[in-house]
Image 1: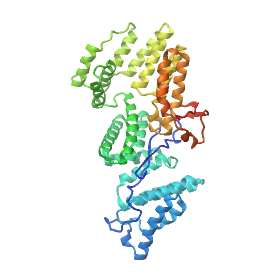
Image 2: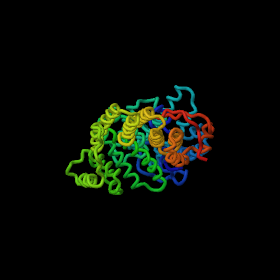
Image 3: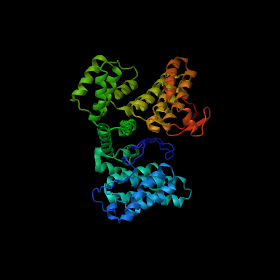
Image 4: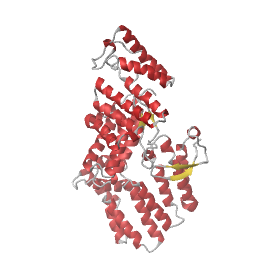
Length: 479
């Protein structure tokens, strides 16, 4: 695509275990023709065609056209010769055209990829960053340039800078542009905000501030995009909100309005579902909504009249249920762990362990811990398929966490998911129908034959799925 298309080279080797982020290729808006317009635009502090003599002007305009032609032919060494001439003579082009800076960065990126000498690779990276600085000198927009640098460092050149520098570059784009932040910074910045909130490097207040800005930027981008630009926003919308949703697992991160906007709306769509009623009630309490909040009072009334459940016999279970229903998920887990320890039979112990696994999955968004307790449940009650169904669901839900929700890194998570569903029905015939339904649903999301062919893989071979999953599985195709 000519317009800032999405590619899926996800995170791609840079993170051995961490979830990965959708890569958005950024380019300047394409011109209708490769011929450089001669009409003088706004005055640039850099040399433009108008500043050149007739001979040099002709050389510069010709070089601008020729380097593009060689780029189309993938002849980057030849393209570089003409690009350098155009860049040295008229970095300001006609005072208006800017795409040659990104073109130059892309040429050097190709040279970087083919280089083997570490010193030469470093020089290419330095040159790319100098090109971006020159664009800033010629046309301004420091926040945009910082976004370009942060994007390239994040996806291509992490070993040549620090993660703190990358975060600062991406953050500066949001600090200046707010909801109008450049779209290509959103996914990597979302990933870095999430990581820093989780490990404590970004405090709750700042994390909430930037999460809110990201949501607003996505809403604004989707509302104002046109044509193929909207394809980029679709992919962003499939990744960033899912990643930020995982921060619901951190106590006091989101406020009442966040939970009410999301879960009260869900309740209004399904007012007769007690599962949704209970979920919405717990989430609004988790957001510290006031007892006088009309939305909370409405859901509480429905819960007490339509969805009342008698408390269980065990006091630990009753306390766990109360904490869960009030959105105190970590407290609920403590109570259910106590129940598991007090259980007199393996079935009861397994039930509470699986309940804990489900809380980590649905409510706290902690997939590794969810898997741990699901496996503990399976160990406590051999021959029970439910824990393996849950683990399969964990894997299948990891597309936006380990990839983009689309593409290779998101597709391969279906392989270990299907492994788990096969295991569930192999140990427990009672779950066979549910397992088969899940298998049939996700077969279509596996990679195609051409996808594995281009990676020199073949169906039936073993494949290690990274990210948090860390499982060896079998390669399968959807066709």
